[in-house]
Length: 112
Length: 117
Image 1 (cartoon, rainbow over the protein chains, first blue to last red):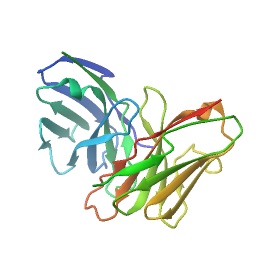
Image 2: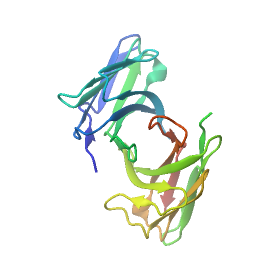
Image 3: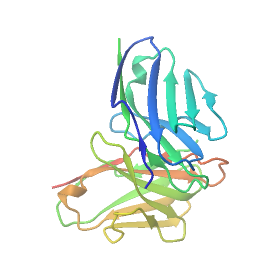
C-alpha cells in the first residue's frame, strides 16, 4: 500500500495557542488529501480536504497546507481549544479515489 | 446528513466462532464502502474495498477467506470475521462514499470493538 507518515506522534499545546500537525506522504501521484480527527473509541471525523492542484485551503479555525515538492502536508489549528484534543490523521488517495491510506496519527493534547 | 452506522458497537466472542459486523449508510446511497482495522494507538489500516453487487477488493496481506465482505445493497455492507482468534481483536471501522459526491470524501461509521477471548 501507499505510505503516509507523520513526524510527531504527540503534540501538547496550551489552550489558545496555534497547533501545527505535520504529515509526509510518499506517493507523488496522490491527488487528494484529507485531515481527520478521531476521538477515543469513535470513528474518524472529516476536518478539511485539499486537492493536489492547491497549496492552501482554509476552513473554520483550520488551514491545510500542501507542499508537493517535498510531499508534505500540514494542518494548522488556530486558537486551539480543549475540544480539539484528539488524534489527527492525514489520508491520501490517488486520482480515482478508490483507496484511502492513512498516516500514523498525531495525538494532540490541549492543556487548559 | 451523511450518517454511517455500525452494528454492533462492541462484541465479545470466543475463539473459533464467527462474528458479523454491519455497516449502513442511513441517508445516502453508497456504491463503495471501505473496511478498516485499527489496533490500539495505531492508524487505520485499509482491509478491503467493497463495491455494491461485486466482489470486494482486498489489500495485500488481508485474508479474504477469513474476512468475508458482502455489499448486497447500496446501503449495507457486512464484514464477517470467520474462525476468530485473539489476534483478530481490534477496532473495525467502515466508511462509505456517497456515489453522488463530486469528490472522494468518505463518511465513517463509529466503529466496532471486537474482543476475541
